[in-house]
Image (cartoon, rainbow, N blue to C red; front, side, top):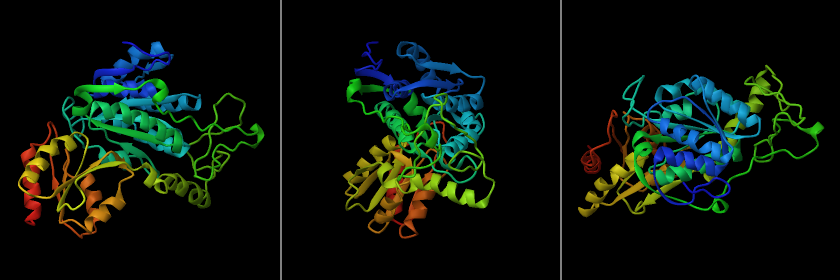
Length: 387
């Protein structure tokens, strides 16, 4: 492996999606990773363990996923960019700490390489069954961001984006791969380190005596400091004031929690990303994400050959959800088709934002493999017939 002075691999490589995530994390400036082996995400931390000594990073294999998801938060408050990696059952164990990161506004990245469940399920086979859990898995109200790559190249690119968004908005950001994307090997082009945009940590630079750990700037995001640098800080998962001290009152809750939600909600238009293909003028729009967005292409192409106007809306940022785009399309098209490797999750968001204006047809799959494109094609045809 050839790396530049900053430790970033450059040029063209054949990498699987898991390894591409590892390289994306390094390129983004991540220097602390804690994790526990779990299929199909283990290759991410295997490569991290190999590469981190070369770039001055620290990888710790913790005793379990709960320890991993709290260790990274300590590292962040110690000044490092940090992430953890998991799948399925491990992701479930991390939910409390995703909520803690949201409450304490700790910027960090959680990579979830999804597999079929529930419980132990099918450890080595794909699914997209954690999409709602990504948004709503921890208790209470909070804002997060979740991205969904469909290739090893995007696994690299979106890992960098995940770190940048986590730093910009001081939130946990989730990267939701699936087993297929994690284990497929394709060409990944890595630019020179000076061409990679890495969002810097929003460090406070005023007088130490004036610092309030949770006093937001105009964009609702507070600057952060590094523990041990002489600042007075208190970090807690309890409802707190701008000093970080617990305040057990409805008034404090009403001030803090809407800000945690609104710093994402009010910036949704800046965060949301999707790809459109022949959506303008379409009668049917297929809404997909992850590996399913690639499996849907043969079905879409077959329908187009038969003269059917089919558009494709591929979700890249899945949370926040592109509500405005779905509402706009619902007033123009005849139907949505939503293939997912689950029995219906993101389709609920499409239905909610379509407001009953047009039919929304789910193409479900219980997991273990990907769709047969013919099933998506059949759904396109039947949706036009109102079936």
